[in-house]
Image (cartoon, rainbow, N blue to C red; front, top):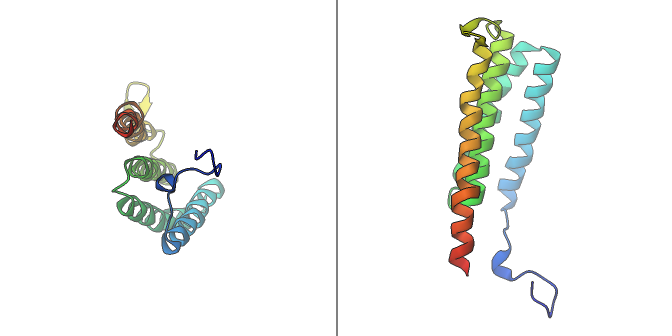
Length: 137
């Protein structure tokens, strides 16, 4: 904070172009439609909504690739949507409860992308963020 103005320094401000912000907002609409369709068991709509939800998420991730914090979080979100979509499809198509290995079912395969998203965020918070903070000092 600048003590004279009580504002953060200008180089700490992150702005999003309006077109990107509109895309993010539209992404939320698609995501909500996907999850409402899942909740209501509207299979065709739920499966259809995977494509725009995931596509926009990947585009947002790509556009923020030069900012480590944004890239990490947006990549984790994209992977979360992928895992969530697999889980939804496994329920819609009725193979979610089929045995895979031991007590695990096909639904449990979603833990792989969920775990990858957690791993990406762990790398950011445990390695990249401390490195960024140290480099600024």
